[in-house]
Image (cartoon, rainbow, N blue to C red; front, side, top):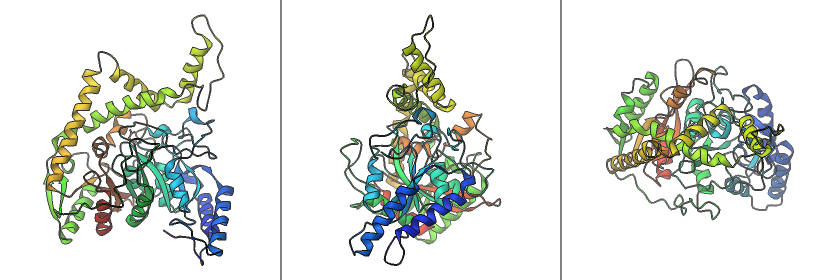
Length: 464
Ligand code: GLN
């Protein structure tokens, strides 16, 4: 991290960031730029430095918030029309912790509305473009965060990962991304997607920056009852086995791009020379992860999105003329939700309500929950043998804008290698692994047992 100090002012760091945001306007990264507030905050930090007063571990560092992180004074609408007029009464715990250490938010960045997607094309504001090729997708749902870091608009950005939304855009844009152990970082003040899967994490340009951000933000929060007591700073898990696994079923998948496969093989060779043993793992239940995810996640989405009714949050449809068979309150709910949600949000609400409905619950939701347990057990068994698992993040590099947006199943297949990690609540670090012949970034992920987040960062640091 480049910090403000006696030679570099916070104002100069923020001005450079704001200039870069302007220069990269064509990528369509930011949905809101907080220029005046950012400069004011930078001036306050510079004044402290001048007086010799202590400043935090992120003094003057410009960062971006994924627009599903709520802020009292910034529009944070999760790139969804239904939240566009919403003014949050709270700040997210994560932003509070970062800003206490002197980080300065320069604005909010684009995502798939409500974080539903793998390309950032489902945004109410239109897509963010890939950092290396503007005809391709940024990945998603945290596309804006990944591209903001890749193109040096900010030194880091926040993200949320329910099924790959940090790791996949990180890998499409050649930056680092962490999906921590479930419950490591407070989700208070972040728009909920699927609560048993959602985690908060970061995008950076180095593994050591991930470590710094984790040490600042990890820990229990009384406002989020799913947070774990802080283990990150006190991590005493050791890489005792000196053994890294790779998943046979992923490596043999016909969907896996050959250049990603060879990037992974070359990392296995590097691991060997670093003194690790590498072993092939057969994990046949991972095949069911995508199907289980696309039942559990929409079920939780349907429940979390039921609160948007035109009364309590943001946008309200104006067309409320009662008819013979509909009252104006019916129309308020119906029209607000019809106009305010994107197509993909509606698809998930419908699937979610279907899999939870009486008569279908046993056949779908319950079965998916059982499959989830089998996946958790399979990972636990693998970690009896290996310290961590090296895996592709997604089967392919960034695809063309528009290529999958009308074909939800092919979009969902993007997540086949990322969702098992969320279902099992495990930590994973996505890191850059070179570029393909066309110059597109390739990414891999290293997955570990719960609470091994720091070890994964350590391995990544050695490996890249
Ligand atoms: N692409 C996945 C989905 O659309 C994951 C999204 C996320 O992690 N927020 O569900």
